[in-house]
Figure 1 (tube, rainbow, N blue to C red):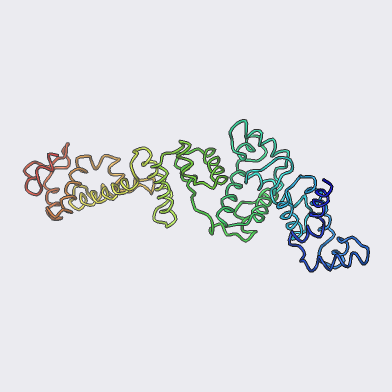
Figure 2: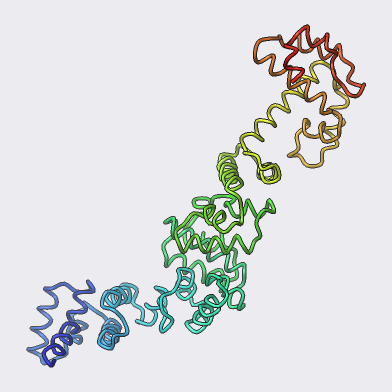
Length: 396
């Protein structure tokens, strides 16, 4: 038993701890031991005098040594913290905090580590939030908001930083400084990032999937933040978790991801993306089908316009009445009843026949001109249809 204790103590001698933490080399340790024996000085004093470590390093090593022997910390973490304290010349307590390691609160979720490292929430606050999290089922961040230990806006900043850390757009310690700047100086998130040399446009997917769904009114802000926290903690996909928690359908999530890509390439505006996303939700139809129908709608109106069925003044007046610039003239003509369902049906049939080569474009215009669009319902006579297309298609 005495041998075991003696071996355990010798394993964590000061010099060996410095060596295993990568602070000094074997040669430096051996030379230091020789000098310490000759001069009858403590090894720590010799290493400080030789300039290989600082007084603070020795204090940190002694504290770490005690923590290891007391069983308060494992050896691997002790070495890492001692190395961190040496590199950054901070106390061992600061090394704990800056690495998001709490004292007496057990393992912390990633968001908790970030807040602790930034000194936004202390060990006691985190312990309280962890208890609240366990009793309510909330993730830690939402529990902290619920207890008013952080604001919802700061919660969102933390989640953005978590995503950036996960995607390797920012290092943990830089993220800590950004968070401290946001809170201490009350500056915007983007400004705090710029202060750390991080350009927002280099990391931001604008908008993020959750933001797009929130703006479309298909997901609450609170649920979006909770799912984002879970996604960061579990390294899981945001959309996948939405479907798993029945907060959105797979169809809506897939459409939102597709629209997000379109926004990144500037092939669509955000307002139009939101309108399309709402259509996917309300019609329970794939985005591709809806986009195709929009394209056909424009073609039908173009055909009706070329045939003179819709006069130019009506088109100009309709265009002038549009308040939302995202709404196309074709959509407005239909929503205002100027292009009726029967007109749309006839135009669609003619477009299909033009595509099949059954009828020429000029012949289709002729058919449209010989009808009476002002009469309702507006349907060409059977004789007119038989002159250009298959009657079976009309009957169908």
